[in-house]
Length: 200
Image (cartoon, rainbow, N blue to C red; front, side):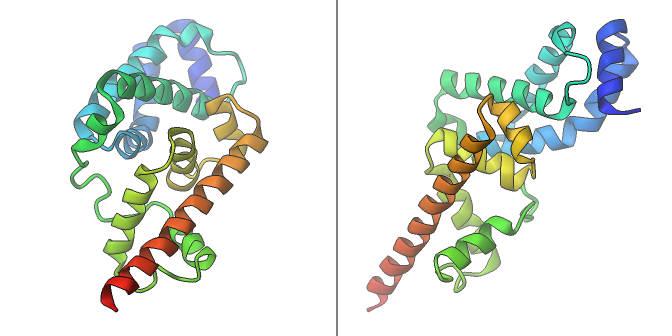
């Protein structure tokens, strides 16, 4: 059964088995997104619970045929944003999500693009150092750019899905990604230069 058919049936019947099936299908993906977005596993746990509570409470607002994946991501994103406003972005990310990545980058495209864009300033770093640099660099981005980048490169969502989640045109998603990658490429170049200066 498709996600859309399952969600429509849950909306109409409110069957606990359908609710549990939705959780099972999306729990790992949504939890990884929340950990990466919030940078705090404890907060991610709380927001994850709130997200699926909202899915239950808002099930009657689900429109037949609407893609379920971006609908769930939109709910999770709104819950995460509300949490960050409440506790503050710095506080939310002050506790690193220990082991949240399991030493694994979901998409290497971001690092590859950064290296090609900035003529390889990260190439001298070891893989784990690059991952840590990317993690820190993403955290310095403005919120709209950071969220868009995470959805695109770590959650591997399509432009139209991200546009639906963020309630913006596809063109806005593309321009935000371009701006985010440009800022990170510039930072990579600056960091490379400063390291060279220090060693001179």
